[in-house]
Length: 277
Image (tube, rainbow, N blue to C red):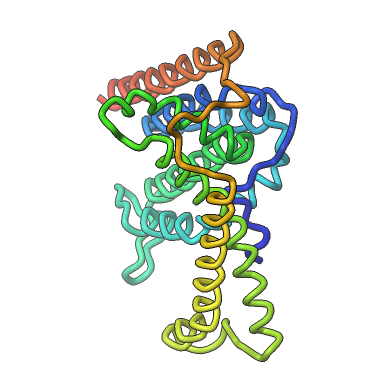
């Protein structure tokens, strides 16, 4: 069900990650994505996976919630696994049946890429939306990109748009689920038939969803105008972001993990190369 998708949701809590400075968490998110992509062997990927599990434990978010965050990318995971499984060649095939050839290297590559995507999506969700409120995320983005205001970049408006878009993802998913349930109660069938028929069956869902989205956007604009919202010019903040020593320690640990992933990737690759020679 679409209501089980947790993308963009915020789970209030009192964990270390919930209390961390959102600006530091955004920087850590970039560092995390970098060392996930730099992992080039199973050992370095294992270190990334342990880091993701440690972040989940620090956030006090249930693992079931983390697994639900993978629902939107299940098709991408399956597609990535199949492509790497059947199109990665090696020396001795493990399965050779007609035109299908599966090599051990293909299995390792498929598992490697799928685990990398799981870590990328799971860790990003933990650091970004699950433990950071939309208001804190807006303030963090505006603060980090504040220097761009000197060249007349509308940083506040840009941050507001990003946060509103992220905030309304769960709302739109819930609205889509309600519309699908209502259409099914009226006899609509979204599962049987050809691809073209399934695409046509989505029209009764898309039209009400677009209408509802535009109505919500109009109501939000009217509410902001009624509260005299005129952008970020001259606005003050109720809660001023402050970094603590623990935030900098957290950033330092993540940087060290990034260096460790790079060293493990290069050292093991070099060692294996010497062993083969």
